[in-house]
Image (cartoon, rainbow, N blue to C red):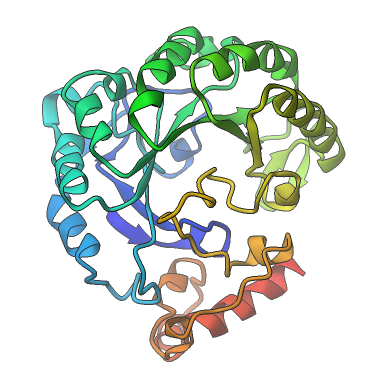
Length: 328
């Protein structure tokens, strides 16, 4: 934990992850992290020294493929602004470093603290994009430890004037939420939200209307595409940007960088990944990615015996090309 790069490297343009906690006291019933660990057991991660090393240009074996200031992607497995932050202040420690260094980052949250002091003032001095998770008021009953959907709109209105942009993270999307989401889009626009990024719910057990997708159950492509095109049309009428975080439908979005910041100067991600290339990014590997010994981040994907010794001899470029065969 802390700063790391793992399995998301084949899927995401911003795969360098930062978490300041293990677990999350928001206790959202649908959270995918429940499949990985006991999220109710919140553990603070005092990783400020890791962050200092990374933003100064020092790379680990997992991140040595990247020789530019790629934005950190903060809040993948826990919410940095969850209630436990009031006790431990791990997020506050890291925000001070990012404010001082002006290192770019994307942070995902649904927490109240992001709009409160001293966090809001610090964010205003950072090079930050804030994603606020919000799908529909219908999900409030599944997010009992988090602010309501209406409260998150208010949070967005306080944060949006103080950061590069605020993105509404419509994840997880369920088809039954479509109309309430469309109805809320004008309020999102009024709150200063720049656009939305959307991805459908994944289930571990079969639900009505779902199909098998890898190890999960998901809504069929045609169902999601139909809904997303309708939602995108309403977004465009309002002047809201639209991105699709669905790996197999990424091209429906305004760009393949579904975090919603690929067009911001200084927020250069890595479009040389399997999903972005398949969806038309046209990216090529950098020179550093072609160096031997830059593929260690792929060890979390390939778990077979003896694979780690092989990966150590490979380049990031070679492993990404091999991984791309799974997406062909």
